Amino acid sequence: MMKQIHIAPNRSIADMIKGILENNNIPVMIQPFAPHAAAQYADGYMQILVPESKEEEAKHLLSSFFDSI
Image (cartoon, rainbow, N blue to C red; front, side, top):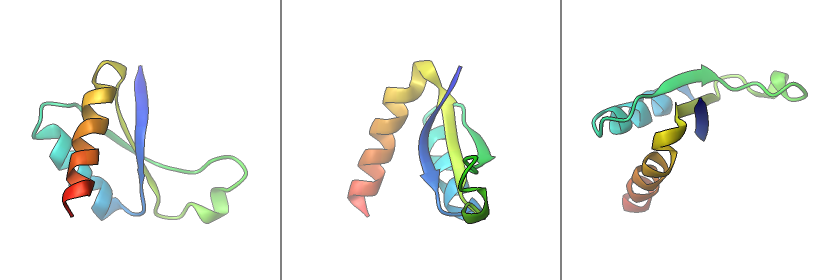
């Protein structure tokens, strides 16, 4: 099962996050983010999904990355 770990504001940021995770051997899926009620406001937002077994590792990597910028 895939778990959402982040919502990126656009495809460029989503691709950057995907690269960070894949470089650490974490499989990644990117999908448009459009909750039912807010679909009209979701243009460009992307979900970052990883396997449930890698969720904590992925969150830790992203936290470390965002803390460093």
